[in-house]
Structures are given as C-alpha cells and as structure tokens.
Amino acid sequence: MGRRRRSGTYPYDYTEADDRRFLDSGAGGTLRVLHGPGRGMGMTDGVLCRVEVVAADGAVLDQAAAGSRGKEHRLHGSSAGDCVTVSVSACFDGDDGCGGPGCLPVLDELTAARAVVLTGDLADVVRFGVGPAWDEVLLVDTGELDGRASRPAACRWGAGVRLRGARPVDRR
Ligand SMILES: [Zn+2]
Image (cartoon, rainbow, N blue to C red; front, side):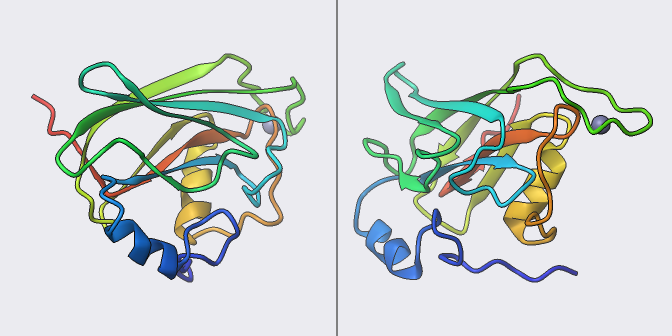
C-alpha cells in the first residue's frame, strides 16, 4: 500500500487549480513525459525520450521530451472524442550497467505507440512506456514506489508518458 501522490505535489504536475482551468480550455487531455526511475523532474539522468502525438488526420498535435519539456501540459488543438496516436522513442545515454550479477544493459532505442481516445475527463489516465525498468517508473508516478533514492542505469531505465483525459482504443 503506497501513499497516493496528489496532483500538484511535484513541480511538473498540474495543480488542482490548473485542473479546474483545464475543464474550460476545450482541450481533450494532458500529456506528461515520464522517465527514471528517479525523482523524474528536470534531471533526465541519461534517459532520453521523445514523444509525439498525432491526430487521426496525420497532424502533429504535440511533441515533448524528457527533461525541460517534460512538464504536464494540455494537448492543444485536441478535444474530447478525438482519437490520437501517441508514440514514445527512448534510449539510455551511456553503457554503464549497475555491474551486479546478471546485469544486462539495454542500449537500443526502444519504441512503443498507442492509440487512445481523448475524453476530456482528467480521471481517465493512460500510462505506457518502454525500457527495462518502465514498471518502476510507472510505480513512482502512481506513488506506489519512492523513486528519490533511485538512479537510472543502462540496465535499469524507463521512459514513457502519462496521459490524463484518455482511454485506450479497444483493439479489434
Ligand atoms: Zn545492472
């Protein structure tokens, strides 16, 4: 049982006031780049990640990266009901693993993509990502794992996105 992270606890997340303003903005959802495992703020600690959001007509709605542009932000030009494709490309800048037994550095660039429907309801959350430690990055974001003492390594890194106001498109 981990403590729940409240919105706005971390500098790169929306505050509750931002959430209220979002409701009047007309945007379909928000995007934040996640990386780590670690504190996951301005410092990328060697994790490189690019995210692109593409509308159904092929228009690029948003591009973001880990680090300075990793802040949660509105998907401008989108609205509830839109179907968008979100793609993540990430790698680790360095080849140093932890050196422990069974250490297996992952040096390739990894990619993943998901189609989601924007709902405009920030309670709808989709997270996905890549990397050997993506599961840990996800748990840090949900508040179930304390990332403060962690540092990414070539064998233990992850990157991805948190979309609010989005749900997965049902696969056929
Ligand atoms: Zn290792």
